[in-house]
Image 1: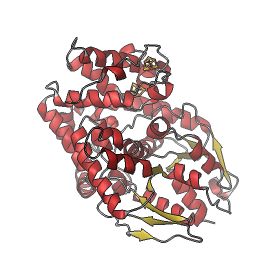
Image 2: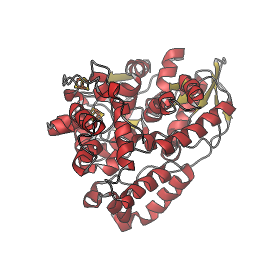
Image 3: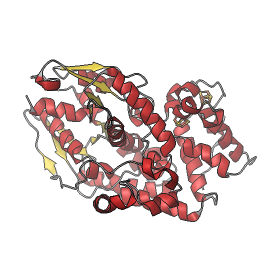
Image 4: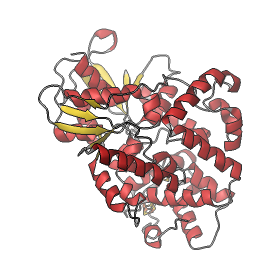
Length: 425
Ligand code: SF4
Ligand code: SF4
């Protein structure tokens, strides 16, 4: 079992500067639901003063793994790593009923196999009226311990499809290079259109796009939920897949996948694969980061706002694993501002988690719903027509929250807006 290292835990100097950045602390005002409180718990476990038991585990479960505390911390605490170790210890302890652990693993296994996930979504559509339209069947919800709030779980929406992409796409105009695209597991089923937009934008920017077949999953969902071994096996398959593709740059349009892949060397630390993992990680770029790095070929004709007139007013939500996990904040904003006809208005608390956080909204629906409500109110206050964000989970979750507003606000990945700007001009 993976153990805490004291040099990691002792980095925390208890200053409390992370507290106001932590969504669960802001919502509850409770020290136990803060990064500092959770680090106290981890240290108590590491020093053998307590064991993982139901109460302590509840505070770890409430954490979103958003890593906002890492950004705020002046002492360099690697909180994301600490909470991954805590979760792995919890899942290997006997604190959870084994049936509930099995259900969680089953959910993760289905979600991370695109074919199985697409079939499950299809079946869910057919049978969802039997379980109140929820994305989770009631028996599985019961096993996960969320049956009391099943009515508030995400609804099935969007178009689940597994349209196959070609293996290679040629560049438009003068060729600037070749890149590989990670299509994602959940994203390849629910966000095929974002992958298509990513390919189009890369092509319009002069890049040949290689899409290696049978990519599978990057391991992020398993890693963030306490199953590092399962994460490693998925990560290794992905690394091998892209080694065969032999591309210098690996592009992702998912913040959660990107931050995990950029840290593969930590996932494989002290194993025979550490060198390969480090080499792969160094090639990974978020799509916005990459376009900013190479310089965008700006679209020439403007997008227009509602009713085809005026500027298109958009706002931007910082996905946690882009802003806090990868430090990517300015690049998407600069690219959005380069689109003719688009006005970007800033969103209050733009880098506060929306509550999606992988499968957090399934496992902790009360806190997830509170954070979604907080996010929706702030988006509404901007007066924007479009909310942009660079992570599939945020896209789906925020779209659900905005769906109830009287005046529609579209939700898009920034690369979709860029794609529109190229294809509509
Ligand atoms: S990862 Fe996010 S929710 Fe968890 S302690 Fe840090 S700031 Fe709070
Ligand atoms: S900001 Fe860093 S050092 Fe200060 S309490 Fe939070 S985790 Fe500990």
